[in-house]
Image (cartoon, rainbow, N blue to C red; front, side, top):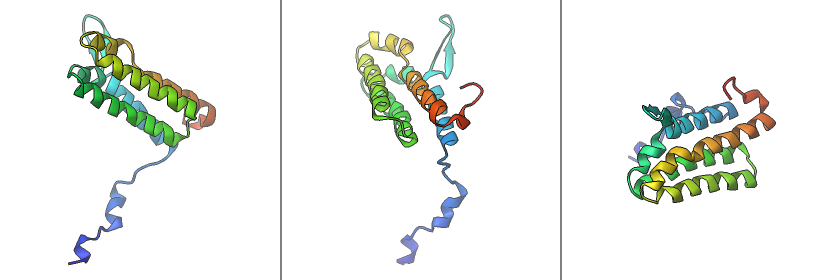
Length: 139
């Protein structure tokens, strides 16, 4: 019975986690797209994402959006960004979260202030400087 509780490490080989810099960049870009640019709102012709949609739910939605935005910061830490850049990224997410707590104004601010897009720009600059082989055509 003791052997039944052991996890066979070979079962996880089917889903390897690619820890390369290029894969991290793809994950970060996908998360930014999800949070900031899922659909375009007709009339204002402005893309919105999960960040804005979650922001419509008072407090809990803003906290959830901040948690998802923090994933980008976690990935950036794994890429070796400096403490200064990490602090800027945290300030972007924090400012976006605090704005989101303000009823109505926070929802409009979510559309205009895109903390995850700003953080993606910081990461792209770092990668262009330190890992130029990961630069993509649209980057």
